[in-house]
Image 1 (tube, rainbow, N blue to C red):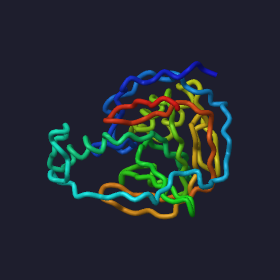
Image 2 (cartoon, one colour; image 1 turned 120 degrees about the vertical axis):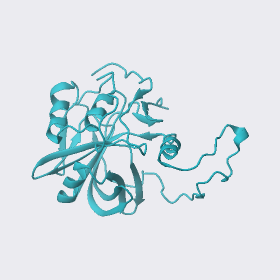
Image 3 (cartoon, helix red, strand yellow; image 1 turned 45 degrees about the vertical axis):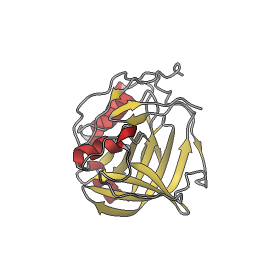
Image 4 (cartoon, rainbow, N blue to C red; image 1 turned 180 degrees about the vertical axis):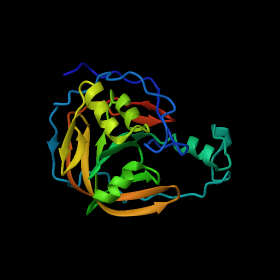
Length: 247
């Protein structure tokens, strides 16, 4: 067991032009602090029955049209801008998210990518959404196998996230984790690789795949999941890794 996790101090993360992180773009800035507070891969997960503990997706939102007159008060420190890929990336980057590794396994072996484009969709049935860049190699394996897993990362997993956001060959990514990062290892659930030290993992059967712009939206039905010991989550905000303290 390692000591308390160190909080990352705004470590730059590999990002896409739309503010997401995944394996479809090269790493622009490698994360540092490998293994800082890295968890013990032998930490036990508690498989649970997928039930109503997920966020309620039915909460109502009021969408607004993205233009400069949409109610933002410039005197309050907002700067209305014309929506384009650059300003969109900056705006949506202010939406803090968790960080995950999505994995799949096919006849050619395992594949995986780092992404923050993950969200719950439904409680009945239990559905999880993941966005894949059209050029993602992981997407090809997900299409072929019809199954994927999502492992949720915590503080100390920054280098792991950087490896799976890179353009390295799929097998090299998995070998790098087991060979170069002490405290990390891979297990298997329902035939899919899952990170043993993850805060949680979920395995899904593909229910639907939809093209949307430059991405494919994958919706999976949860068939297995487990949670690990509590530790501070890895958070992606404004193009950098950070964290939030546990309550």
